[in-house]
Image (cartoon, rainbow, N blue to C red; front, side, top):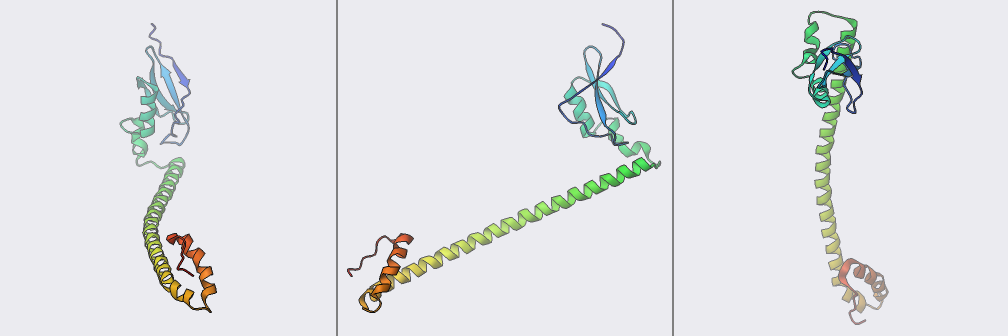
Length: 174
């Protein structure tokens, strides 16, 4: 084993987020034996040394930005203003506003859809009840229609509808 600390850039299947300081691309780095993993920004060189035992833990630490140098974000440059920092701030606020608006729209759509589903179910129940009532009235009128010689031709028009509606074949001895 050698004590020489050589870092090497490696690729990862998990996508690294951009640097919180300068919005540049970051690289996953491996060093040492046993291998330890860290992340470093290509632009401002922010990041953390290879201290994580696995690629996944280093990636999670960088992407979550909790408990590491990258968690400091704009706090490390508090009181200082730069064009790059202002652009990043505007971009972040714009993305946050857009995400909030989308979340509100989704919430409103889901709420409206649930109300519409309930209203549609009530309408369907009412329509089915009205159709059943009309079929029952028609079934009650059928013997009178068959008895009237002028209207007995209409009975042939109603029989298929009654049969289709689930009342079976209607035969009143005509």
